[in-house]
Length: 337
Image (cartoon, rainbow, N blue to C red):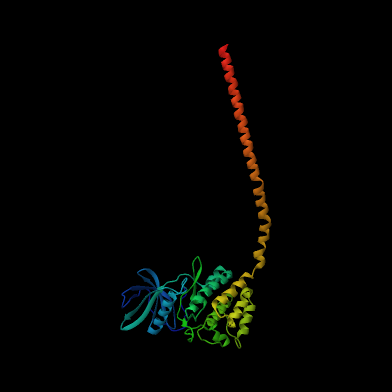
C-alpha cells in the first residue's frame, strides 16, 4: 500500500519491532513496516490491540492537529467514507523528544494506477465517477482535497471501492492549497489559482484520467499549457470517451463534482452504442418467437391429453363393470343348474 510521496527528507526512521506507547491513553503499537513519508510526517503500519493500523507521526503538532480535524470532519460526512477512520490521537515521548501521532484505519488494497493497469482501463470510468461522488460530499462540507493523485487513492474490494489514504493536503475552502503534486496542479500547467475551491480538485481529477492513460506521466514542454494537455488527450484512443470531460475540467468549466460526474457518465454511455445495441434486436426477434412456440403449443396438447386420459379411464371402468356383471350372471346361472 503506497502511502505518501517520497519527495522530502524523512523526519524519523524507526525499525520494525519498535514499540510506541501513547503518553495519555497508554495504547501500545508495534511498528511492522514503513508505509511512506512526506513533508508533514511519516506513516508506519503498526500492530495494535485490534489488529493492523496505520500510524502517522510528526514533530509538528500543527500538522497532526490539522489532519486530525480533517478526519473528524470526514467522519461526519454522510455516505461511505472516502478517507480512513480516525482511531487514536496521542503523543510519544522518546529520549526527551515529544513525537505527535495519530492512528487511523489501515486501508488495504491497490493504488488506483496499479489497479487500472492490472484490471484494465475499462474500470476507469466507474472508479472516477465514484471518486467524484465522494468529492461532491466533501466539497459541500467546505473542504477541498488539494493533493489528489493516484498514489493517494486505494482501490479496496471486491466489491471495488476507491478510498483515500492521505488527507495531508485537504484544505478549507477559500484558503491556499497546503500540499500539491506538480503534475496534478493547475498552477503548474496553466498558471491557475492555488486557492482551495472545488474546481481545483476537478482539475486534478482531469489530470488523474490523463495519468491513467500515461502511467509514467510526462513533463511540461515549452509553455506547458492547456495546448500540450489537449494534444496528450487527443493522442490516446483510451481517452476519447473522456475527452470532453477532461478538457472541461482543465478549463474550469465545472462548478461542482456532480456536474463533472454527469459529463463523465454521459461520455461513457455514448462510448459504445453499437456494441450495446447489436445483441438486443436479435434477442427481441428470437426470444418472443420461441416463447410463443413454447406457450402456444404445449398447453393445449396437455389439456387434450388430460381429456383423452379421462375418457379412456371412463371406458376402462365401464368395460370392467360389464365383465364383472357377466361373470356374476354366469356364476348365478351355473348355481341354478
